[in-house]
Image (cartoon, rainbow, N blue to C red):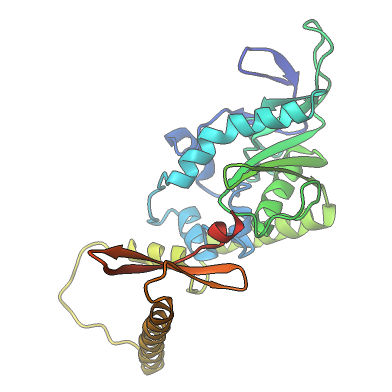
Amino acid sequence: MSITDTTGHPYPAPDGIPIGHLTPGTAAWEEARTGLTITATEIAAVVGLSPWQSRFSLWHKKAGLPTPPFEMTPAIEWGNRLEDAVAEKWEDEHPRMLAAPAGTWRHREREWQRATPDRLIYEAPRNVFEVPDTAVGLLEVKTSPFGDEWGPSGSDILPIHYRCQVMWQMDVLGLHRTEIAVLISGHDYREYTVDYDPDEARILRDAAERFLDDVRNGVRPDIDGDTATYQTIRVQPDGLEDRDVEIPFGLVTRWDDAYAALAKASADLTQVRGEVLDLIGNGRRAVCEGRRIAYRTVRDGHTHSLHPYTREDNAA
């Protein structure tokens, strides 16, 4: 079995079944991810570690129930646009290796287990007549606005949801190493290596199978505090009926307590902003031991607004 690169050159494929080259966000891409399948970008949600999906939102998607539509955010758009550039940088750093587009795959035996790695890694051919040997690993390309969760370049310290993703990809394709190239803050290039761990892969597979069983049996996950869960609940009702719905007293108590806590937090924030602004006076910035805390903007000689500095600002 073989695949081809963008020029039609044949590359021997790893152990797995190729589905095709699908563009994220397209109808074909969505179709390959629907139904009772679990993809590499979904497995972190299954184990409750995804920053983008919750078990609740993913359960509804797999059950064929309404979910919020896919949104092409600026972060996703620019991640897609920069993927080729970051992959080329990785090839520049590894001149003896070749990274070819991978496409979408499923496991040879577990049809429900899917993955769309960014690149397959081969040893570069010595001449135009030589066909590369079987893929030796995967290349995953990432962009990130800040590097708090990323360790030193050359380590295997990376955000846990990405570790879940690449472990799943290796399990699907039968490969044992993933190289990760990441561009942080638009200028900080780093590389990481994750080796296949059969115990981790088995934990993820077992969790995925239990999750799919819950979908088949209609066992909905509990409602949690994830934004994705709330957005999923929002799209469930269809229409509006003018009627009252009785809810439990305990839930009303939690509602009242949560809104009281929110009001207090809002008042506390307003107070601390006032104290900071009072100390700044006619200055521009508030700092503490070299860390920039906040800055003020001025219109007509008076304070217009007070803005906090972000982690990226202090890292720059």
